[in-house]
Amino acid sequence: MPRRPIFAANWKMNKTAREAKLYCAEFSALGIDPSIADVVICPPFTALDSVRTSLPQTIGVGAQNSSNHLSGAFTGEISIGMVAETGCSHVIVGHSERRALFNESPALLSEKLDRVIECGLHAIFCVGETLADREANLTQQVLLSQLQGSLKPILSELSTRWTQLTIAYEPVWAIGTGKVATVDQAQDAHHFIRSTLSGLLGPQAGKGIRIQYGGSVKPDNVKELMAQPDIDGALVGGASLDPRSFYEIIKNGASQ
Ligand code: 13P
Image (cartoon, rainbow, N blue to C red; front, side, top):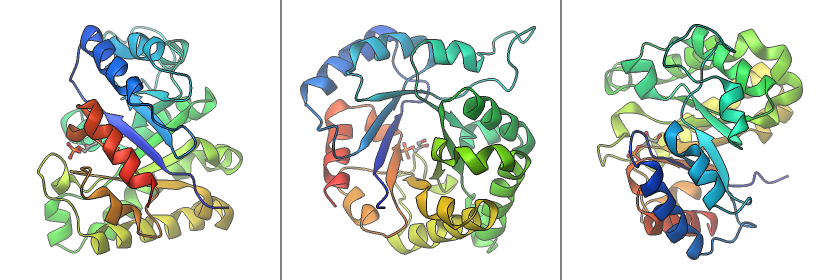
């Protein structure tokens, strides 16, 4: 069965709830056809509710993070139950900014993935190498350890629930830099991720799990990325902040 494309907007720490409402009105008015792809918008926590209530149900809403704990004395944290109650369908786990700036380890990310999957939501699990890793020829080694480190501890749960998992390959050196990976670099990494998933979860999951590319995706480069056999969508940062440009990315990418 062909994999359905999935395009997600990661707004990072941008837009208040009020600004998010204006965005959603503009984005909805563009009239994206829900049959062409899964579309998910991931605003900051404070805008989850207004985004959910401003968008049609055919568009998913995602959180950018959630706690590995279910409740308790964790000042400033947001639990998966709190996220789920806003009507969210997705949660981004392990974005490179969280790994690098908030010291999130593969073991911690495994716990977070577990909470998301247990709760019945979809996880967008991010992996990717730094420029130093790539220059030292360590790309595959880094991807393997990120995937194994977080997926291995929850293999038995994932074996029946892998449809709740999407991987986002985001080379750190391509994020917010305007430097998009070449289509060959992206395809090679996606292919490697897919074979690693097959090894961990079996061939059916390996074939079925969607892998998004992220890093300086724009309306004019998404088509060639989506033409690659193992690229199933995009996780978009900067270019998703403008409703028309996110719309164009979806339209151009899904028509590939
Ligand atoms: P940019 O699209 O701004 O490069 O960000 C990519 C990203 O980090 C999405 O999660």
